[in-house]
Length: 309
Image 1 (cartoon, helix red, strand yellow):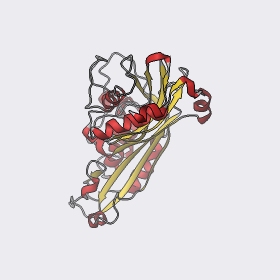
Image 2: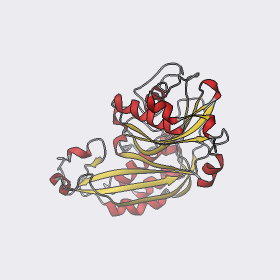
Image 3: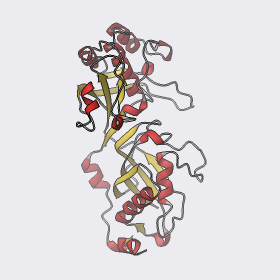
Image 4: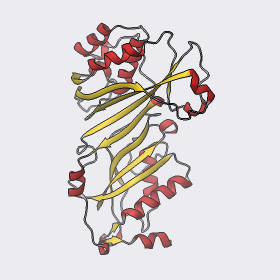
C-alpha cells in the first residue's frame, strides 16, 4: 500500500467541513471535503484494491476555507505498483472539476510510512478576514466578499484596542474557555501555544468594486503548532467584542486565567466560519525530503498510461 502527501485548497462554504460525517468508511460523503477527495481517488486507473485511507493534517468546520491544507492518503493498486504522483494529481483534479467541486489538489508526493500528515506538522497558520464599515449601518457589502469575509457591524469599533489585546493570547495558555465543548470520548489537551497573533490592514478581493471603499479590511493572523476546536473563531470574536466596547481586557484575562467552558462571556459571539482561512500547514522541508520515496520508474505505473485512457 502506498502513502502519499497531498496539499490541497478549497472553498468551504458549500461543504459540511473537511472531515467525513459518517463512520462507515465504505460510504461516500461528498458533502464534505474528505468525501469528495475519496470519491475522486476511486476513479484512479487501475482501480484501487482498497477504500482509500485519508488522514488530514487539520480539520476545518463547515464554511471554513483553506488555501493550503494537507493530508496523507493510503491507496493500494494492482501488481504491487505505486500510482505515479502525476497520475494521482491529474486524476483527482479532473474528477473534482468535472463534478464542480470547489477543491483543487496542489501537490502529490509519494512518502514513506514514517511521515504522518498530522503528527509531522510543525505549525499551522490561520487568517481571519474582517470588514469594518466606515459608516455605521452601512451593510452594502461587495458581492465578491460574500462567504469570504466577516462584516463587523459595531458602531465606533476601535481596531487599535483589539490590536493591543492580541498579546494576551500569545504564548502557552489554557484555552478551555475558548474551545467548543468536547462531545466525544477523546481527551483534549487545552494547553496550547500561540506563537504569533497579529491584526494588520488587509485589502478587498476586488479593489475596483466601488462598494469596497465603504469598508476597512483587517487581517487577523494566528499561528501555532495546533489548535483546539473553535479556538481561532472564539479569539477573533473576543477581539471584536473588545474593539466594540462590549467587554474589557479584564474580561478576556479572566477567561484565560480561569479556564472553563462555563466561563465564556455571553457578551461575546464567536466569529462566523466564513471569514476564516487555513493559510498553510508547515513541515520541515528536510523531513519531507528524507521521507520522499526516491523511485525508479519501473516501480510506478507510468503517467503516460493514465493520460492515454
